[in-house]
Length: 163
Image 1 (cartoon, rainbow, N blue to C red):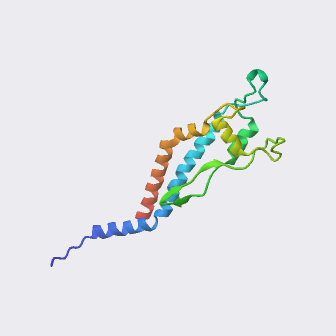
Image 2 (cartoon, helix red, strand yellow):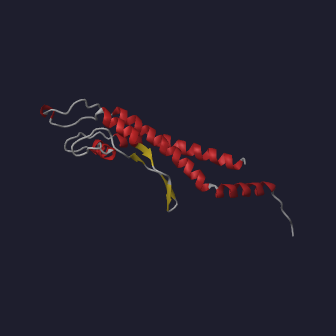
Image 3 (tube, rainbow, N blue to C red):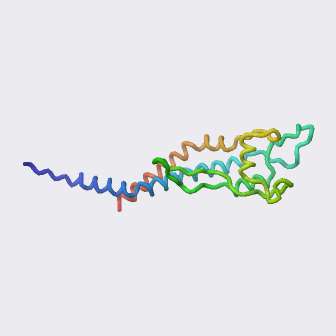
């Protein structure tokens, strides 16, 4: 019986085993990079929301067209990325808002919830014009986020293979 030795195949197999052992860590790095790109894009879009310097008048229909400076600041400071999770083989992280801004009202004596302000601005309300800044940011940065994830994954693969 003939004996075949293939050093290249053995090396390839060892590299595959190393990659298999570190798949979870590589996926986390890639997802985190992509989420960072999305968070930066959302942060940039917050700056593009029109400024609201005074309450709207009756002549303006009583409709808010922008955000006060402290509301924008609250959104920027409350923007973050959740811890990365895996469910059914899918790795994910969410970019969203947490905390409260400094605009205290009778209803919100500790400040307005950033999630509420973001949702009201994104979708509009009976008293606020719709300004979809999150959707716009995601559409703008989608390919950049995918590229960042691809680059991060390639980099992690090279680190593992070259160990």
